[in-house]
Image (cartoon, rainbow, N blue to C red; front, side):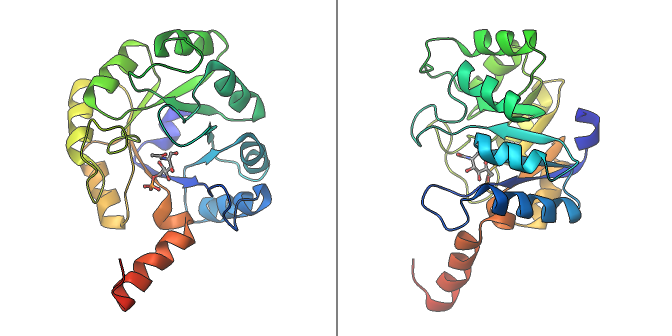
Length: 222
Ligand SMILES: CC(=O)N[C@H](C=O)[C@@H](O)[C@H](O)[C@H](O)COP(=O)(O)O
């Protein structure tokens, strides 16, 4: 399955609490449209979205479950990860930072339990320190997802190619570039920098943000 992602685009399909598109059927239709456009996999959030999208696309589904929006919130516990897998995720993405987890398990203990159940794990890292810990724990995929969101790395305008390059040089396993990839050129640059795949969310699937890019440019508002 990981080979099918090599050199390809993964599209993240997510709507946030209170937003008009936060509806599993809507998310599934957007996922299907992304698949038609050539997405090699879909990344999505929440059990209802995972199962709706799994029923609608043929490409692999990377599932996560966000609880809250501060600290460890991307698939924060083993229970969340197991639920994503049961909902149909082919790969489960989880917070792979060195911060304490709400269920008291370490990241390595969480991955070991998931591996014993046959779950493929994507590690959402925020720094090279996180990536080392996540690699040591045996994560199947490493990703730059949380760079700029944990206080360890500055939030760059575009993707964190510096971290990506460091991870690619250090680890002999798929490293995905995720976070603030806003243009096709940035996506290409990420692959050229050695990314196994590039994950794009907002710039493809979040019309509220995309609209605000235009209104800001036109109306000059911040
Ligand atoms: C930090 C965090 O919570 N990232 C989340 C992870 O699933 C999503 O909100 C992002 O949209 C996703 O990572 C894709 O990134 P971008 O939308 O920048 O292309």
